[in-house]
Figure 1 (cartoon, rainbow, N blue to C red):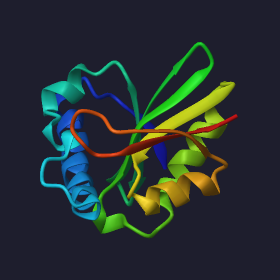
Figure 2 (figure 1 turned 180 degrees about the vertical axis):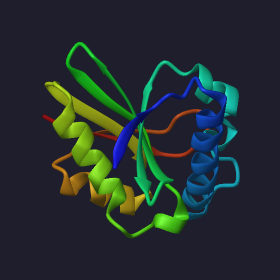
Figure 3 (figure 1 turned 135 degrees about the vertical axis):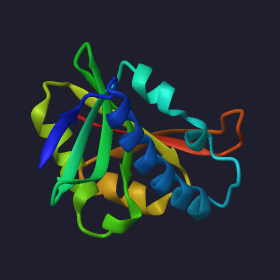
Figure 4 (figure 1 turned 30 degrees about the vertical axis):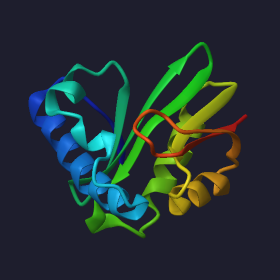
Length: 148
């Protein structure tokens, strides 16, 4: 089941934080970096965020989160994280499908590390195509993908 999460609630923000930490630690290993910027995001940062968080629950346990904004018909996926206990169950794909079906948009974008092949392949399955590459100041080469 997918529901909107009230990230301003401290308990919910802590649940989001926990999944972010568990998931991003695996992603940092995959990318091969010790200093991964998403891991520095605090509970307070999550609670204060103006983005929308949607969670996928499995047997009343929060398993995955998609974080989005929709502004002027542009949908942006800011994060998509799955607790490692729930990897390889198709949950990330369900959250992407939900975001692409539930909102009115003309284009959607997402960014990820160039070496994050599992994420890139998942987004490609949902029609996303690469349109840009760059290396931000933290040094992890990224790419941006979009779908219309």
